[in-house]
Length: 571
Ligand code: ATP
Ligand code: MG
Image (spheres, rainbow, N blue to C red):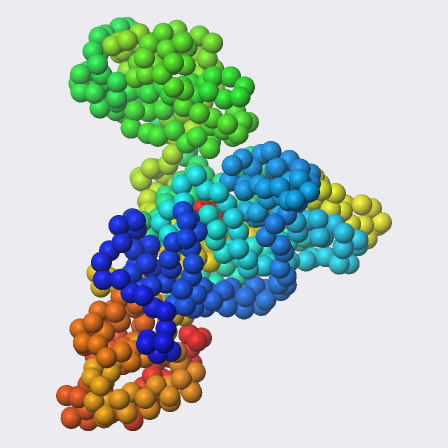
């Protein structure tokens, strides 16, 4: 492709709207433009990257035995009512009415539509297993669309759905997808890690998220260096402490802590540490108010609390509720004498003696509190987020913490949707059974953004070869006859051998061309200048580290072929 004939509007300045590297660089490299919040146009360069990722996904899905189909973006409310998700999904589901006043939505995911198809078309166990996938536009009216393609409202997803006749088959289908995902993200040139993920209220079944490791990731993962354990922090189990404090209980005292609301303020006044303080967080749920107690230096894992209580709604109580339930403002809540509220505590605090808690009275705390004598906890459970240094639940070392971008998700669904929608088949004995399902998603745009988060420097993007919009950026440094002639002939021969070349044929200064080339990030630059030609050479420059190889022009094609074509699956 020639730059002069391509819609490739690079920007010199950082666009103000972009908070992350990938968003900034996608805008600056002319890959995407915003149409509305979380809604983008993919320009030619951006689309090339999207298509590359899609191609890798297609090849690996097909290889794993999945079949491609394409479902509609709009779907009728009736299907969503059958599974209860018309009400449950909330505002992320963009709903509208057609001219006949019938309710529709834009698909945020397609379990309902695919299950409807399969229940109509599959009658017998002989037609199973089946795995169908599509690569298609999704719409989710995200509360906070941000970071460009990373969290859009309209975005491209590969979603696959497997249907099996039993649990064992479903596990096999799941494993095939897991393996396909490992191949997909490896082929994309990404450094990633599959981690155990939360399964929501369904529970029991398996789920893994594929995380691209990047500082800017929205997700927190824990893993062990030597072991095999890796999990999303939302899900990571924390073991109960091995030892209980042997301190002798001291007498309970109520002490003034004027204006001290936070753990830092309270421990400063009382000259103690967060490890000796138990904080009490009040939540409201649809069932009842609840107080969750964790050590002062820990954070509550709300997903674990929801699971323990069997609720889907859990909100931190506001000032007014806290006042009504405790008689004190936020910051002084404690378990002692707290009535009308269910008390649950993280199992770590059970081991404490002589700890600090809120006094349920403004500007007051208790010191030297002890369980049972001073207050009774209804249930101790694993309710906090795992931290660096915690022992792995698999016993394979201490946990480390890293940030990740969730690019893919594999999930065993069981019979949740097939039962709700009566997607049944007749087994070998003529008995009617519900199909056992799995679902598997990959965010295509998010994968492109993650590739940039992981591969860039101060000058711009450094594409991994397999997802690069072009392999070589051809940079003639002047308009002289000899430079132009060599550029044209190299361009033609490279293109003919299947190498993708962006030819900067603009009449611009060398500096402008270099800046754009570094920004756009093709893995190789082929530089042709009058000075080099006078010595009979052109330059092959590696974008990653700037390494330059000087070659005779007639060797450039061979060199490129060796780098890009020989024995690699790079193209
Ligand atoms: P998240 O927790 O990030 O919102 P999710 O759990 O809602 O993701 P899934 O429903 O599992 O995501 O969707 C499958 C894949 O689609 C995700 O792994 C992610 O790569 C991608 N994805 C989800 N939401 C978005 C979005 N708003 N923008 C871009 N990609 C997305
Ligand atoms: Mg989401």
